[in-house]
Image (cartoon, rainbow over all chains, first blue to last red; front, side):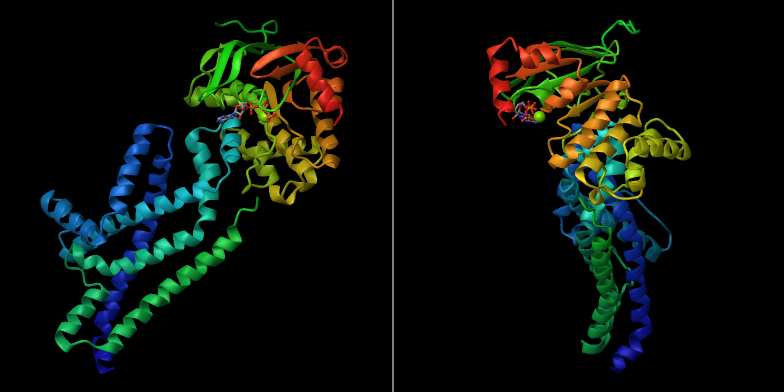
Length: 222
Length: 251
Ligand SMILES: Nc1ncnc2c1ncn2[C@@H]1O[C@H](COP(=O)(O)OP(=O)(O)OP(=O)(O)O)[C@@H](O)[C@H]1O
Ligand SMILES: [Mg+2]
């Protein structure tokens, strides 16, 4: 218990990094996932193939490798740098890798949502003169989103927990990293362990709860 | 290809063929629809009636032949195709109202997003159209809250909101409870009287007799026979049509 109190400030600061990563990655991966799925279902074969290839590669690669690629491949080899400050740079490399990774899951979830929208909706949209992307944006995607709010919640929850893998992209003092560091000093401390688990559950449980409620409230009645 | 004006047909199909895989669904169709004309298409299930409707606004592509609309060949894709579709209304058997939008939004979406009309203007016009089809009081509801007949009348208002040159109806009353068929047919008869060019796939003989200029009988992907309704229903000239009529009249 003393360990938990002693290291609490460091752990809290680390946990704040997880929260920041979660917020930024949630926004970016939802946007990128929406763009990806739009290409994935586009009438142009090139776009469809490109999106499908991306999704299949990224979704089937372990996250640690995606993050390592983000750090070693993009940053060290190709010289991509977000900041001179190493921890800031690491933060944005993790954002890039984790968002790119999560976006592929968002895209696949949305695609299953699109499959729940009856074909007649798209036909009616085309029949009044909407272009493909207009009907996607105004008719198909809004209904697809509402159909998959709950599964999207699960994707976001997984993403929040995945912020603890950030150390694969380099030195970033998020909570799991701080915890491991602390354990190296003090040995394993069960209170610290439980404290962190509770901290994560304090965000992931409401996310799941909220997603469930929104899913019920926004469900499209046919 | 620049001919316009009242003398040319609004729609002209010449030698149109369409396959679904190995199934030959439209066989060398030649068909004109004049401006202001109401054409009723009838025939046995699977004869190609829906496909005929759907090739006219290119919801289905054709394999050979030409279709001209208002003097111009149908555009293949892109903005030009979208513009063509905005000029051809379509009313589906299953209504296909946008489920996540209100009745009024269903009617104003096209004018706002496709025609670029201001929201205020579109809503004013939308309410007029809903009034005309008798559902103005439902404007704020969602499609699922309306009866089938009300939904189909909304779909007609949605088509009208685009000021189309023609409206295609594919079995507009087949999915309705019997007591709601008449309210939809009444709206369609009024439209026909007002001079709207219409192509209507339906088995409602009463509608055909009251409103159609011409009945087209389709079977096995071919136009087997066509003529004025009175003539077609009383003295069909082909065995195929006689046979079909005797079956649906015993229903
Ligand atoms: N998208 C499609 N893919 C494959 N076959 C199709 C498709 N659409 C229609 N068909 C087939 O083409 C034929 C003609 O269909 P169509 O819907 O035009 O007939 P219909 O005259 O409208 O029949 P119904 O009275 O049953 O509506 C049918 O045999 C049908 O099974
Ligand atoms: Mg049909």
